[in-house]
Length: 329
Image 1 (spheres, rainbow, N blue to C red):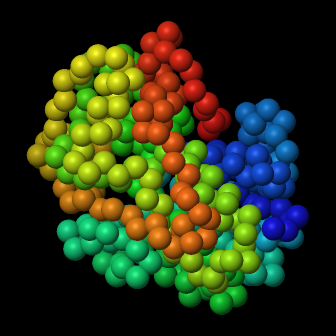
Image 2 (image 1 turned 90 degrees about the horizontal axis):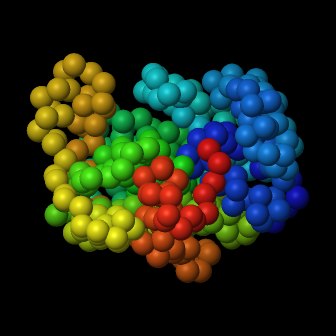
């Protein structure tokens, strides 16, 4: 471990905020590039972060923020996910340019399963062939290809995980589909009903990132790792954990994929989700053997604790339910 700062792009995003908290607990010096420095520093209550103001689409701003760092955590996405397909690749190109300018900083990327065809790849490991089934997956695969191509100059670490569970995961499938934020839950809508699915509890995932960055000398120049997380083999364990958190039974319904296909031509949410339906119809498990080689046992919070923390964070539990740890967005 070095004493050089780590730059986080996307500090106020879901995974970026958790990684930042995990690194701060380890005493790592952090920098953050944010659009509004005053608002961000206020939200983080005086955390030991060096603030830079700018946008990840501004290459000069990213290069300036990365000067003197040895690691860039690329956890940034376009604001509001607008023009996602047009902006994602220029953003990673800016991070690569900044890493080169910093003398070969390591780029760290939270990865997804969208790079793979779930019908053909039920288990993902570092040797699995990337054959995206969607346009979003094709863009993600190209992003990772660019990281690999640049890794002889700028090492890269990708840690892939399933769908997020966590107190700040308000835009996740868990928070927008299985349940709904800021309201009492009367039913569960399960997009994985009868099908295995991978979930990642964000504090555990962030801790895995922190452990990896604590021992950079053990990492290859290009590491593509999988975080196994919570494997719900038949789509029943996560809904059952929601019921346990509430202490009562809740009716469960399948997600209306047929309706999404019908409404997709009109845009909005149905158009956004229709292409990911295949990742809910086919089980995809993440093989974490290489990760375990590097950090030992994967961080693993009990499912019921993870689900209760998430429900508390998205304001779905009644006030009497015991509060668990949460992280600022």
